[in-house]
Image 1 (cartoon, rainbow, N blue to C red):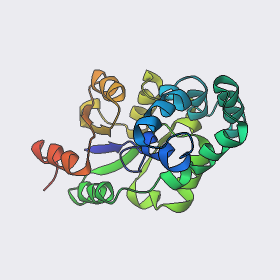
Image 2 (spheres, rainbow, N blue to C red):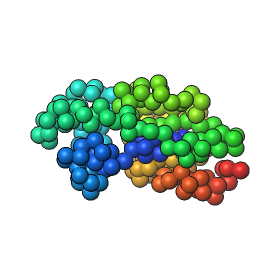
Image 3 (tube, helix red, strand yellow):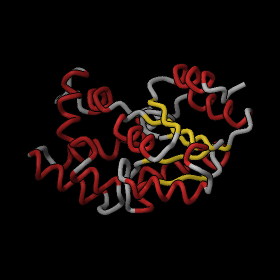
Image 4 (cartoon, helix red, strand yellow):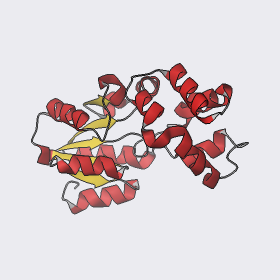
Length: 205
């Protein structure tokens, strides 16, 4: 079986409300305010941030577009963009889950919507080559989830029938897109819940 992991919110910490409350305390004094700002800043990963995810624009362009769209100062927007790598901390429970999947004989891969500068950071600072045989970053292929094209690229890379692909992602739209292609798609909430779901399917010893 091939087990495919999402990155942000699954393997790496990514929680925009608390992230913005941490890096923008003057605008987001708590997580509730952070959630409101996150919807405007990241626009549900469509628009300018979606183009950044797909590698269609770089960091300077996304900073300028967000500042122009929102009226927030360029320097403040740049501060958020520059702070993202510190937010992307590996989640220990998910690392253990990857190791457990490998120990059970499964082959592990990743499928991540990730701007190029953050993909580079993760490759340079984490042992992705030990955790995974390979994978796809959206910015490297100019496609992103939940679009069908990036799932087709993943299928071509894996070279197995869709039913032999187990996919863990924290966004319902991505899970729905994978399930529609015949993947075994599991909505990720916590490492413990994901482990229980994999055990329930007889995929872990």
